[in-house]
Structures are given as structure tokens and as C-alpha cells.
Image (cartoon, rainbow, N blue to C red):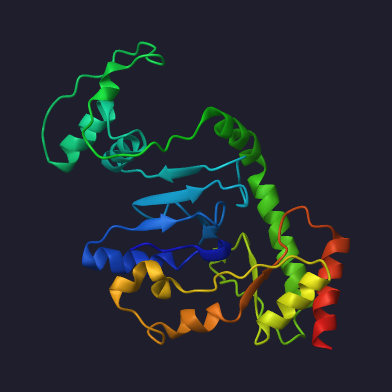
Length: 269
């Protein structure tokens, strides 16, 4: 099961874990949009077998390029991921191969020498892997920024409270936040029957918007072979025609928020 903590709001992980346990399934959390969010006081990314994070620059915690992280408390899964991120080769590649093929064998540990220039072990490939290593520059940026993530997330939450209160009397549907979660508002998503019109109006007034997402996953052409058609997932399809995002980031000023809200209200008058 792959729950996605969409827009920064955690899924109901109690219910998902109950289903997974009943059917002996693994859970992979997608925390790309929800770093720092909580479900019943517990950080997301720690409520499953394995979890993935994104550090793309637009995320709540972003680096200066592409980056990401996988976390797990399962040593075997960790070893397999370490192997896959570096071509499926070397010591971790051999360990991962043995884990996946249930081979009991003592692996000779690397000798600890500096193998930066030449490491003979990396030329022995055991799995078809990738070159997915986070480079040191991105890691250095993230190590500085991660100290600020709770402050930035709290600022986003305050911005969301302002929006919720200010737009309460409009025809727009504001985001729902479950009582059991701490939403971190990667995106602040509104719903409108007149999405195209309001998005166009806001653009004319210099306010950026975004549509997340215009085509539901089951109707993407990449999955035509699965045979889905319009009407198969009515909730996703309904929302894909109504939802749009307005500016949401920690540094939004009071003046900017007031302008955004007042402009939205002007559209509805």
C-alpha cells in the first residue's frame, strides 16, 4: 500500500496499517509533500515499513536541485536501497543480492581504505540499480535548512489559518484538516465550480496559482493499458476539475496575504 500524504496532510495511518496487517502487505509512505507533518503526534515517514521524501526546491524542505531520501527501520530494506542507489554494485550490492535470493553467506567487509579514486568492488554488479546518490553540496544545504523546518511549517500553518478565516464566507471550499493530524500545507488547495475563471482573474491581478492535478492518475496516458475510463474513480475526477492552489510559503507577508484574499473576494462579488 502506498499512501500519499497529499498537499501536507497525513493519511489515516491507523486504518491503513490495520488493512496492511490483515493482508500481510508492506506500506510505503510517500512523504514528498509532508515532511514534518504528524499523525496522532507521530511524524509521518515513521508509520510504515519504508518512506520516501523529496527535497525538490519547491518542497517545504528543498535543496538547490534534485534530491530525496528513503527511511526505514528494516535493515534488509536499507541494504537493498543502498545497493540500488549506487548501480547495484559493491558490498551493498552483494548483500542485497543475497537478501533477495535468501543466500546465507558472510560478505567480506570493505577494508575502510579511501576508495574515492578507485574502488574495485564497484565493478561487480549484483542488481540492476541506479545512480541516485545525493551529492555533498545538496546535503550541506539541507543540513542547514533542516534546522528551520518546524519554524517554516508553523508559519505555513499560520498562513493557512488566515486563509481559512478570511475565505470562510466565500463560495470556495477551503482545505479540511483532520483533528488527528498536523497538516504542513505544502500546498493550500481551494475548490471552485469556476476554477478556470478565477485562476484567469487571479493571474491578471499578478497572483500565481497552480492546478494540482488536472488529470487523475488512472486517466493518465501512461496507464492506458490498465483499462480505466472516465467514471471509474468519480471522487478523483470531480476534484481534478475543481481544485487549484494559491500562494503558500513561510515568508508570505501580511500585505501579500491581504491582497490575495481581497482579490479572491473581488472575483466573487
